[in-house]
Image (cartoon, rainbow, N blue to C red; front, side, top):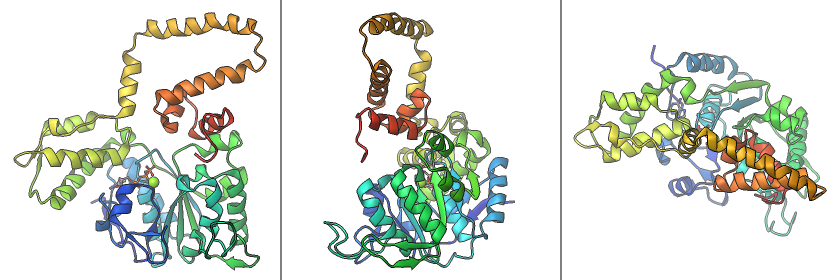
Length: 385
Ligand SMILES: Nc1ncnc2c1ncn2[C@@H]1O[C@H](COP(=O)(O)OP(=O)(O)OP(=O)(O)O)[C@@H](O)[C@H]1O
Ligand SMILES: [Mg+2]
């Protein structure tokens, strides 16, 4: 059985909102809607996004079968998976298999919505509703009416917006900011997150009632290293796609290259694999992709290697130094000593990870939501970041 599924090409209604310069450059902007970026067909994007799903590993095949069973229902879906595992692609696939396939699919990245603008962006606003509202604006819910609204990085929504979202889901209507008249809404919601929302619920950063409303169907995407049977089929798929795009003709993959790709841990998942193949083909010579053409650097694995190769003695020495310093700190009678030390640890980890919250959270073994809340509380980042 071939598990290479051709996806239904997105309809002209397909809209998405991205914060990356690459996508903004390659897509058209819909007239009269400066923040609405359209992707009329898959070729509009630099990646080979949304043209096919490669699923060969048994884990992926059983997920795919589950998707086929649940997609035609109207149930809200929560997709969970690490960065680059294909959450958006799965959301598009669910839409393509649903009764709503001819209606709009609207993708919104909640992480890119600032706290102040989120309400107007999602639910729309009337002219004059706030200082910068010089004309009325349709929100993403209204734009997606009849179709599917994909809310990516849902864990980044503030508690204030979570309450409003819950209300919209319960009442099935939106009220634009500055208006009193509700607009009926018929939208299927698909949300995605790369953080464990359960932890965010426990930490008080995500509403439990909203969590249950969102995850009527829960689809968990495994990291690529846990579905090794997908690696080579994906490699062959991306080699075919990119060699065609680059006009390279037939490209052979050397057996040593396959071995190298199979041995990698893929912390950036399928996106990392896609980029590695794209780059490899740009430098490959004589129609052969050799191991040295494929660069598998990754920030996370470099850091992990650094930590792993650091002498264990050094680590225990460092811990001993902290333990020795503690009595002195206790003697200083700080008052809020715990908060103070937590601030020092958070600040150091955040700087060590070049201000990357996801990586700093991993370093400390806590969730992205928890670290974000803590960084805000400690005044290290602002609530708007
Ligand atoms: N099963 C798959 N078959 C083919 N291509 C895939 C597959 N899964 C993901 N991709 C490709 O990998 C890239 C990343 O996928 P996608 O954007 O859906 O991931 P994501 O989980 O939403 O990432 P992020 O967490 O960073 O938002 C895209 O170019 C997508 O087309
Ligand atoms: Mg995504």
